[in-house]
Amino acid sequence: MRKQWFITFALGFLLLGTALVHTPNAAAQNQTGTEQKGDQEYQHDFIKQDEMDRLLKEGHSKKDILKAAHIAKYADKNIDEVLKTYKEKGSWEETAQHYGLDLEKMKKDCHEKKEKFLQEHKDDVIDEVAEYTGKTEEEINGWVNNGVPLRFIVAGAAMAKASGKDLSEIVQMKQDGKSFKEIMEGLGVNKEKMHQEMKTLMKKIKEDIKD
Image (cartoon, rainbow, N blue to C red; front, side, top):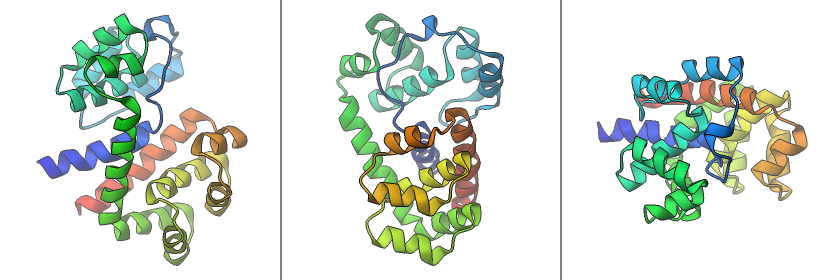
C-alpha cells in the first residue's frame, strides 16, 4: 500500500510541477466552464475523488486543492485546515511556513525523490516516453547519460506534445541552460494542454510500473 501511494504521490507531484508558488487567493479567481469540466475529470489517488468534488463545490480551485493536498501530506494535516490557513495567509510560502515547512526545500526534496523513483524504474519510464514521443530508447538513454534529469525528460515529452515540437528540441533548450519555465514561456505552451498531455503520459507510466 505504501509503495502504491508513493508511486501516485511521486507522479502526481510531477504533474503539479513548479506550481507551488505564490498565487492569488482562489476565492478571487473566476472559473470558466472549461476549467470546471477539467476539474471534474481530474483524479488523483492521494486525494479521493469525492473529497476533490466536495472542495470544488466549496469554491476552491483545482490547483489550490492539489497544493493544499501536498502540504497536508508533508505536514500530516487535514486538507481543510491547510486551505483555511492559505485563505488567512494569502500565499503558499507563508502557509508552508505556518506548518514548519520550507516550500523551496520541500520542492527540492520532492524533485530528488522523484528523480530517484524514476531512476529505479528507468527502463519502464524510458520505454513509455519513447513510445509516446516516437524517439528511440537509445536516444533517451543518451540524454540521461549526458546529465539530463529523467523527470525533465518526462515533463519535456508532455511539453513537446503540447507544443507540437520534437522532444530533442526541448532537451536541447535544457542543455543550453534554459529553465523549464523559460522553455514553456518561450514556446508559448498552453498550460491546460500541457496538463492533459502530462496526465496521459503519467497514466501510461504508472500502469507500466504497476505491471
